[in-house]
Image (cartoon, rainbow, N blue to C red; front, top):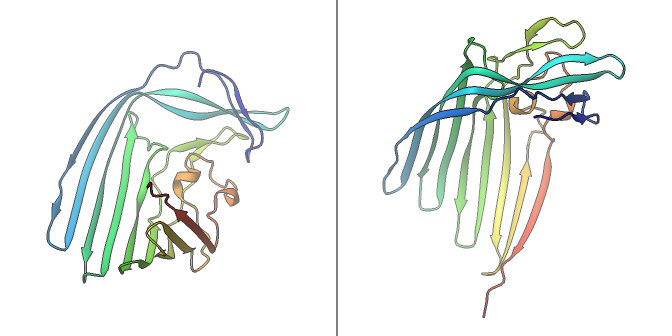
Length: 235
């Protein structure tokens, strides 16, 4: 944050220029949560609030014409605040079938009422799994809502201000399988993104100019992965 750091292989290429007047960021955080469980269910909701002083964030401050490198700099925002909620819950439909979900969302703004780059849309996953003694199968849905609450970005070429890049909602399915071959050997399989969906998580493009090329940030398509785990048991 205090030194010049080039990122010439990024797309687009940029350089972080020093800000020797940068002040330390401090914050106050508050979180309230509950937990409940029954014979075949549990739920843990929580809400939180954070207030920042001298909040640190980067801004695009210009374009170096000689080589086309965008210049960015970390700067202080006098005050900022974020708030949000999250929940984790599960329900055993039968002794073998479990339905579980996790959801989270973060909103906030700076002292001038502008959205922060660190916000996230409503995002989560829901999983249905079958668990036997030594193997299990699962179907998981990952998803997120569209993100339209974004900060403003300066155009590095024209110097004009406008909304930063927004993101659309997305949905992806995955299948998993686990097999405990022996007490020490376990195999895991995962078939991700069953429908070969092209999508971009907002967290990966937050703060980019509207119209930026997001191809490098698009999540991978359908893929199959496997892992083998062996645990050595001491004698």
